[in-house]
Image 1 (cartoon, rainbow, N blue to C red):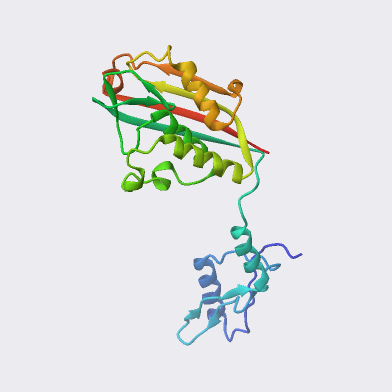
Image 2: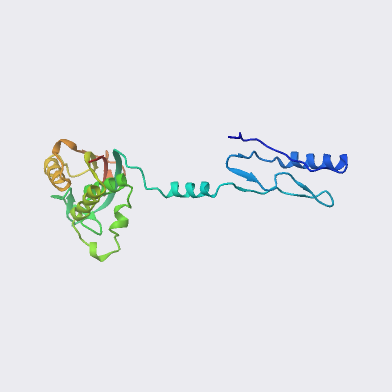
Length: 239
């Protein structure tokens, strides 16, 4: 196979001044190397014209199959990975008089999430984590908040769809780690109920589901009991 190099084929020049002009043009235009294993040169050397004007070289592919292979390589489906990792985040504003639902459990509190659906911040971020691991659109695209169909909908509906898509893609949950961030109420009395319900919705063993709760040290809207947030990381494993 020929190595990549610059080649210059000069025609027979009528005088030294024409030859010098051609060499000067090549030097000034800095011709780039051509790999002769994949290209042929239609007009590699400049052609001397009247008035010492030259025509730029034109190259084309020697093998059309090269371009077809490149296009087909791009069109190939994504590789089948032994595992996938996804992260989810969600935040909702808390308003008086609304129910506070976390992980499908109704938590007693004087405020609840202002949202289009039931505002379950934990289930929303779990859904996004699974969808993200699968490389799919997020929850807002699959279940848009301007669609009346999802008005007041239980977030368990969204999670069940995410789990279905996970299994359809040939994956199962390896483990899940979630962190809830809110100033009030304290979630310690409710953590086990939330975790149990999450395991049921995901069809997973409790040993692979971890749930943590943190305050925000009275900083910004989270610390002032005006909002609630959650982060979730999931590991999906190929079946």
